[in-house]
Amino acid sequence: MNAQELRQRLIAALSILDESSDELRELDSAVGDGDLGVTVHAIVTAAQSALQELPAEVTPEELLTLMGTTVSTANPSTFGSLVGAGIGAGAKAVSGTTDLSQEDLVRFGFAVTESIARRGKSGVGDKTVLDAMVPSLEALVNTEARGVAALELAIAAATASIELSAGEVAKKGRASWAGERGIGTPDAGAVAYLRFLQALHASL
Image 1: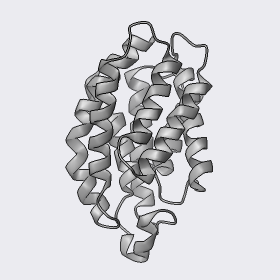
Image 2: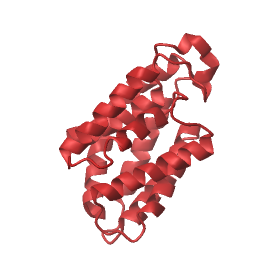
Image 3: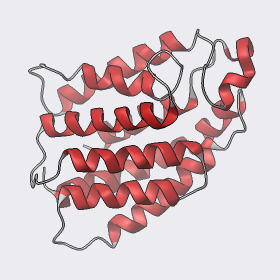
Image 4: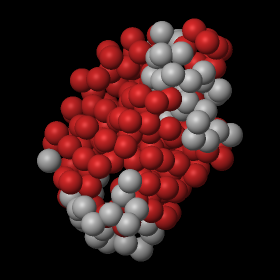
């Protein structure tokens, strides 16, 4: 997948993701300030604008670097800052690549999670976006599935992990302030990531 193909897929997926903004706002309101829906909508709007204006001659690394900066600055939020910086780190992981393979995308994804874990001082089990991201990527390591089938594996892994972590107490972010009151409510950031994967699937 070259940069222009990636651009078109992201534009289509982001349009679908925006439909989840209200759901994410309500979910985040249960244990936090409810800003995630606003943040996601702001990210979608800014990212689509940036992608539409992207020059034809651009590399995947340049596109993803732009996305990282755009996500970081679209709306003042911890989620946007962490994810944006993660995307920027992921862009460096695919430096020099003109056509992204599935393995390249997995490498990109793990670089994103490593950045989020380091900057957010969090890990799998803390009831954050990482609880969805890491399992979805691990599902793609050494699999023979490709394309839509691989994406479906990632979605299934993320879904199962979110359902499992919903029964835990959040250890990071505003959600951790809710303590046991948050048990039974899935992490809004993790759900946002799942909705993005599902949006990618729906856009194919």
